[in-house]
Image 1: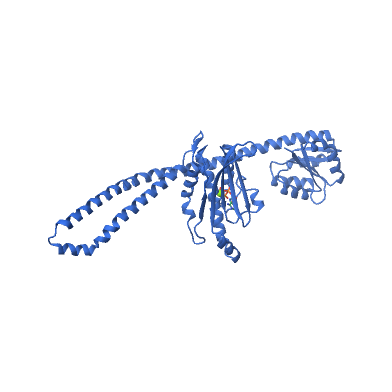
Image 2: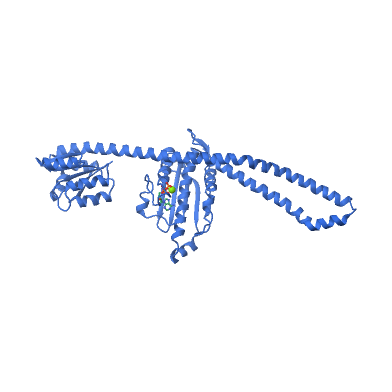
Length: 423
Ligand SMILES: Nc1ncnc2c1ncn2[C@@H]1O[C@H](COP(=O)(O)OP(=O)(O)OP(=O)(O)O)[C@@H](O)[C@H]1O
Ligand SMILES: [Mg+2]
């Protein structure tokens, strides 16, 4: 990794001297120097490039001096370290700089050997601090999401379990009811055939209740009840598939079942509302073998990505009042397309499963797209988004499964997420 060092000094010759003295390190791509003439310019460069590791700054400069820059640096990025370069003997400024958080200081005239050692030592501290911070954030993300999913999972598994018993006795009794009805029908027929006395009263009653209609309608009613209970059962099966507990070992799992169960759980969110029609789900499933994986976490990934797509389509429906977007809508109804396939990597021929989830919502600007996998990055209002969905999804796909998660998006063209899981 090349270390990026921002040198802030109003002396134009310094750039040339540094490029000369460190030319070997620059050529070996160990160091990359960026230059700014004053504090203000330095802050602009840091804002444009968050991967800068170290700032070497002079103290006396026009527009914004080094001491003010130090104060602002702490606000911009706490992991970034600054080393001040000051005239030999300017102890009072050096003290002020250290009090404002400078990591170290160098004296002028510059001793480049000393400068190199100071740079190396400071870079090590920056690297360590950033690694620690990243680990901490990752652990925090995982903790929150695990907690969230564990309680959702438990709730869903619990409801599924509770639903099963009452549904079983409805569906079990329906079978008996159908048989009883057949028996009763048979007996009615026998009566009609053999008992011809006092028919008038019976005929009147048959007319009053519209017996032919009942005989025709009752079996249909029973069938639709059977279908209803079958649907509740399949919902409860999906709920259980979805909330499969996170086992310590990989297990063989049908990814299509995972996606389908996720869609069933999200079904209420796909339905039409006052702002938009129902969201169409277009499935293009390839032939996939079962995959050794962690089903619970993978379902979480499907859930996060599909829920984001629904959020995006909802947001789109709220702003789609003008004519332009109305045309857009007419051409493209609200859709989420999910396709799966097996591909083999051209380099090592390793086979992988590719799942694409695409929506035709508002898409994202490049600036947003660059940040979506970051911990706590969200564009949604407080209470609606925590900014964890995609960072945890990336963790699950990349670290837990050795796969890949990517996003292709542009404004007005929609968004596509590509999940790759090696077989
Ligand atoms: N399909 C999409 N279309 C447009 N923007 C998207 C899409 N998916 C994600 N984004 C953007 O990426 C951001 C981060 O998504 P992420 O799922 O990590 O967090 P979130 O949805 O905001 O919150 P939550 O933690 O509740 O999931 C979203 O706030 C949104 O701006
Ligand atoms: Mg989300």
